[in-house]
Length: 247
Ligand code: BT5
Image (cartoon, rainbow, N blue to C red):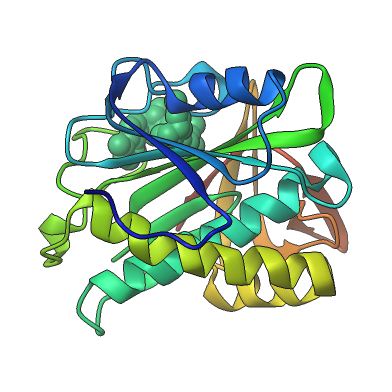
């Protein structure tokens, strides 16, 4: 039996699939309502941003959720921050209290400074009112040798399974998402910044074909990363990969 979830969610639990985002995108294209939730125990073609691979072995949590936020796909950034905070809430509930849980721009969750979860938000062809939120949480395993260090919940002392993490995530996400729906992005932005790694510190942001070094000054009212380049110059970045402690 699966975990008991709030009414909002309509769960389809799969043993295996290529990518839960693909299943959710197909359902959304057919008109599936908000709250449609797909999970898979493992994925054979899990993906990250820009076509990268997401390692998805049996035992980790892989989920995709269909959402119809107030201004549809244009709310993608806000939904990403709400979801990352909810994953951070769920992770914090699973690990010993002393373990540090942080969010990393744009949508990663860090445990003890290493990546424990990643999020991928995709738009639905033909449906401007909807988007698909995909989340991978490393519950029992993580890949070695990734450009940004990874970890998993078991390695950090949490004796939980994917169902436990889903049961912790679902209500936490509803709180964050309903808060966004009623109060807008500003409180979410503040909550995200309070949990973010590296604000005020030196970072490098890698974009396709470019790298910018500066001080992480925060995020703007749209969720873009604000990078202080020195000399009074700031640059806003809407997509990229952040590395900390850059020299
Ligand atoms: C992400 O991309 O972090 C988004 C990951 C979203 C995965 C979920 S699982 C359910 C749903 N269905 C899907 O097919 N996807 C979503 P990005 O920031 O681009 O990070 C990808 C990079 O992280 C890879 O290039 C690797 O370097 C590294 N990586 C791959 N697997 C990882 C893992 N399990 N844990 C930590 N890092 C990983």
